[in-house]
Length: 402
Image (cartoon, rainbow, N blue to C red; front, side, top):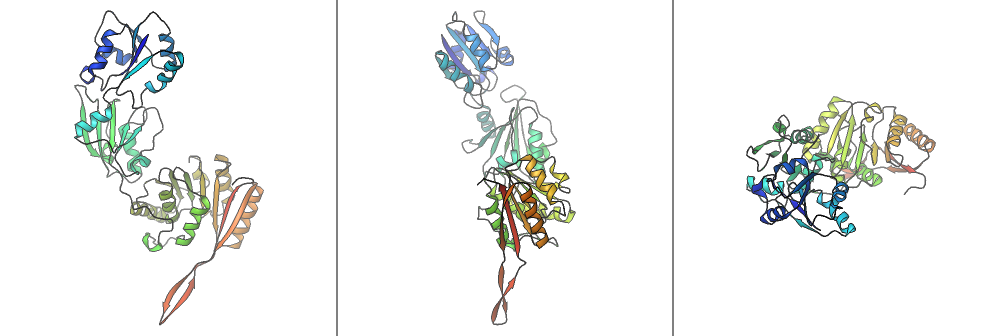
């Protein structure tokens, strides 16, 4: 038995390779999705069987009466294709196979837009979790296979909610079919449109600042009248939380968003949720998100701990303001992730004492660091050191964790 795994290309006979066409003409058995089987030319010598799952296809191929068999896939066999799961099963069963690639939707859209695609980030939102904001933050165009709840409009709504409604996007609808449509617009406009299920999306990269170390100068932020965590303390917070690029982080009591911004830039491939209930502070967070290109920073209006219920599982949590609800906030974080990394800032000794007691009662090993920063200011011909308020940072983890 010889099995050919064939990528049909865009879905019409015109995009099929000559090698694939010849293999299909010689096939006695053709397996694949019903929609794809219906698109093939009729051949009286062939038997068509609808099958999609690799295990189901392998079971159908167990009939040794067939010599030439084909399994068909849409697009290209090397781009988010079911061929990936079938090849190992065929090898294990000792069934020889060939893979015949097709023209992918990436190639078709690039051709329609007359753009090269070699530098695009390729993402699948078809039956898989997809973070559109993180994708466009990598500094290159992001291509999305869409499907299910992740339609082009849904992906663009996520971009718009993150402050990226201005991004240029292009949608390729039913590529290679007679009713093909190419739409070039903004993410905000696309968020209100409807497209056929067979659609793909290309979004331009989000503008982003140059990568720098933690500790952005204080005067770079929009501040207003809302208290702000100072530069040196922010750098220490990131060190205590050990934020990685893929982390999901909560900043509870976000204030101006200065810590949130630093966390978002560190977790560039993850998500940061800034929890804040004061309208003036929320406005400042939006302005600072845009100023620093921290598009993966998401605002959560409301009071903690109630506002934390709908948030995803955090890898790290910073608590900059608790409004007397520290125990509820810590418990909410631990309930989501018992091994979460915690950092609490405290100015008052009472807050420090309460946090230490709380961590001890929850079985957390706490480390206390005091940061006292003084900055020189000119006073006539001399420079005088002016002290900022000392800040205590309490970082906590489970006993025995590193």
